[in-house]
Length: 174
Length: 418
Image (cartoon, rainbow over all chains, first blue to last red; front, side, top):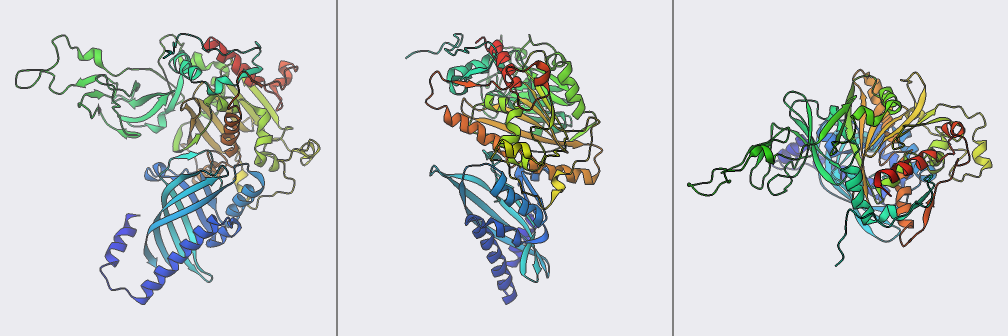
């Protein structure tokens, strides 16, 4: 993953082309839409930002660092993502809450013409119905995005979180 | 100022001998909490502290807790296990500051006192002073100033430790019935697949009760009933041990021919009739056990839960964090001979458990609701009556029984002298 930062560091010494600008713009737009959908509770649309077979995972950093596979959420394909949202809406029991995402440090490294690896930092604050807002999770996204007929989509998105103790429960994707 | 006398038994009264009435005070009293540290966690019990698979190599270590007390579990150069209180013999500072790692020597940063993996004191800087003055007195004996060492035991790679010299051997403490259930899950070599952690704003005993309570399973967790994993018609067995401290619930795969009629008739609002999963592979269960049980939830008091939910295998370490908080650490495992497909299935099945578990996330919430609800209570009681009239045979195979909870409270009272 550090190769993404290396690629970004190498890129900054070069002259920026129009193609670079467009890619930068597209990737930022994807990330902003991703965050907006979750923070506005439009979760039914969230899986659409992935390819049909896209993978979404939330994994604690201690496992990711030790190359251990287990996380708290693993969706292999859009159907599993939709099942998560159906379960959230209709089956699971939890306190109503909202998220606000803060993201920064987005860097990327093209793999080929139609796929890019990128990473960024995120902080999610959660507000419960008692009116208290608390820092819920800090972490980093590691993404592989691919160009499709409908624009850039996530083929893989891993939220690797530093906040290893999850407070009470996690039901809404980060 | 009044001084708390730890030897004095707090003013908490269980009005019935059968464990069916629990004073709310036991969930939020600081006095009770301190007494539990002494009589339970530093008392005659074996506390689960981790898996051998987490520290497979010589000189591997992990930091954890027994109750409030920070400890370190190590594997020596010869492969043997040791555990010691993570508190420097000199000034009490935390010696080991990493969660996990590998080292032959644990050094306290404050004054560089160093200890071996067993916790024996190996080095004291300037022990003989400097420039001919200072240093330790002549009667200083390094052998008397090691870290506080604990008794350690391992059963099928599950590591336990105790402060007590009086508690029987680990196998005797677990008991033959509970050993058999552990043997079931740990019948072949395992590998560690990672951990997840959940922090809950409730007293640790609310979780202890939760894992002994078959009654809540299909009611609190709609995912269970809706997708026919667990309903009250499910064939169940509630195993007990002699002490009453441990318990094991087994749930066997049972087709519900009525399609949830019992839930509709009982007006269980958490049951959703028309809910279907698009991708049912999460519920795929490659049968790994002769008895075809879908679920094993086994509790070895006070810090361990062994869990099999379909193909998800894990231990849960329960840690008290003051009277009002607990931490759960889920250690996920697979078998060493898993195929890549099976390993993938275990990762998929992990979706069901832990802090984001489709069938378990509500446990944290439910215990928090109790902790919230009992605020301001004085002498009120929790009531645990389900199955109180039933025979032992009936309760053994009933989902609507609270016998394991009552049994636990009787054993708790005995340990605590309440």
